[in-house]
View: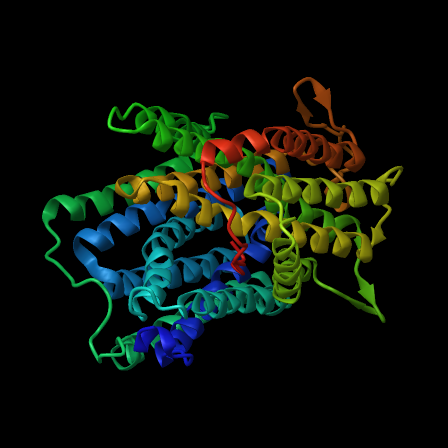
Length: 512
């Protein structure tokens, strides 16, 4: 065993990156926790339109790391990319503060578009690079890397846990400003101490070197910012119902398998494994489409039809978004023990079956909330414990499915296509988040959103009108339940297509 592999202590740089990422996630999840409530309550955007904007925003957040990763590798280097990304995200959160300070209206909406564009592009530079630097702290083959990422992802979940509690406890504008301050703290921390802590055990600075950025690629960056701003503004600018971002994301999702599988250099084994990745990516869309209602329709439900009074104090609706990261932190070690116990007895489920279990648990979470709202009147509310139960069940489902994705791609993708396949997996997450916004738009008017002086307009899906919350939640039960059943049926065949022996589960504590 090498000296590096024998070491047990982690370098100080890991805890430095932990702190930096924790504050960046505080910023992102704090803003996300109050975003849809801000749109519906301050900007007076209709539920359906606010849900679509939410889906477009979170979908594009998963796309821009492809651009940021490319520019980092070619020109900017890890450190400069992180600083640029942090500055753009801090600017975006400040613009959201200015948007909320207007009190609504056209100016508030215009400033919001600028803020969202800045955050989306900034995330693309920041997110992929700080995770990459965790691995660079360690020499190749170091057994501490797995536990290092576990510690790092605890920082993600810690930031995701307390940010809704802070940002959701104050007026919207101050909530956005708190998110901005969180990002500034992260950025200042990184700038001041990067040279001291981001070094290898041999004392050398880690991270890709900075190269000259030519005019062509500067124009690519500016053009990307312009395209995203245009896509976010398209419906408002042209008074159109066309969801141009949906066409962009879903079109790319359909095009990528055709491009990759048409590569004639692929062997039969490589082709089979890539097909498995695409099939699982397809099912992941349904999982996250249902799971990501947390920041959209479930937040509206928490605000309007959930009894949130505790000892005379009304808990903010955004607080419910802290349940998932807390549950992940508490339950992940337990689930790891369970998988280890089953593995030792050769009973551990295959990766596709674990993903099917994740889909089943999401469906079960919606069964719980559907029972709670069955027969519920417009002005009536359910106990918060129903919603808490849903979030805990969904968190267990996340732990069954989320850790599998990146691990599957890294194991199954041909080395020469590993970056492209990882980008495709993020593309599936982008499609899932956009799909989540589309599904959230189906939530029927309820509570304070119903104007008794006007006729109620109910949404519909494939010819079925959704007139109440029970019918709305049944959409997710049917969708994820059928998906889980199909994946269970396909799991043995997929395992054969993968053509590999089953490996022991290694937990990923990322709050996605």
